[in-house]
Length: 499
Image 1 (cartoon, rainbow, N blue to C red):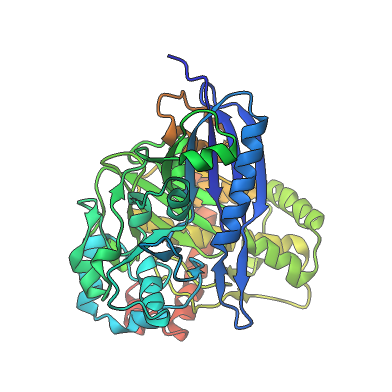
Image 2: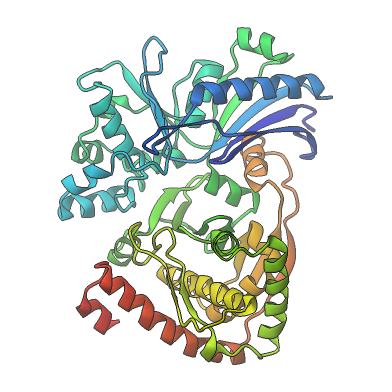
């Protein structure tokens, strides 16, 4: 039977939040609101998300969208970044700030873990210990907000705080739980052993839900104030990376490259990958937003940010960079790039990604002369990003020739995508899909909805001749890459020689 209701989807992003109203019959967008994600930034540079102001913005957006909708709102679905959360007590009072997922408070606890404990945590949770994960924020908040010994506290992530305020229910989504370092990723349940290793109160974790389960119903009082005319269910869609993949209807074995300021590689699997190599390469396992499926994920701290860095550092306008990218693409296809003369760029401007993930590493630009024309600089930046991506991609043991699906701003950068296709020797598909996270959250809440068609905007095929030329450049690039990491103390000389 057709669903003639509407769904409001909340996508809580690091930079912006989007609240969108969709038809549950055909996914037509009925209205949308967007606002800057509210933050509290201290003089010391620490960052908290302002959950109270975020709630006020979301309520205002939902109220106006419900008033405008030609269909009655019957569903609310929430997707979000991971890791960030707060403690609440039994009276419903928020007891702590919400540390931003990238904030480094809690990093000091990493040094308290032994190598054996790190290894055991990976076996249980599928995560390499890192300060971004919720566990270290939880421990920092317990210490600094004086919550030790209290048995009336509950940990909730950002979308779960919204759920609680909408419905009164305290629940945690499994995709977000798999970013805490306390979920048994294989069993899909909270791990007492992991919580014990990390010195966290096991009783503080909320009951788990799988994405798509109805987590609760908007209270009658709030329904009236929001202008809802029918009962409204609330769904936790989950971690935004997983939700975006859901919109693309990914299948096990497929690989997604999400691009933006950073880059991410996500592989969908039928089981978690917990072997020694995955742990060594610091790959992150997670629960997917469909039952019995798992994700293997790695991120690169610098993606599109490298071009922003070029603009800010060398004072080139966006138009000049766009022109150089277009010209560079044509020169690359025509084999007139002088690869022996292109400077070597290692894009560790904000640290390095897998297989040598380390936030303390720094970038390198080598091979400068007394002049650096913009076309040569853009060639260097593009090649460096492609080489760094290839290093990370190799950690996933993807079968040769498996298509790489790309979403985000890189889909409009043919040079970047062709370099990836050639150095990986696999087809690369640029997926034209607006608001993948919002659509994925809609599908999660309305599983009978026919998903919107996934359109391939462009397909880039690998070229064997260009690959051979890139291999020579890659060998030289890797020599500098390993030498730099050795100087930074990230790898030792024995590893450098063996590699």
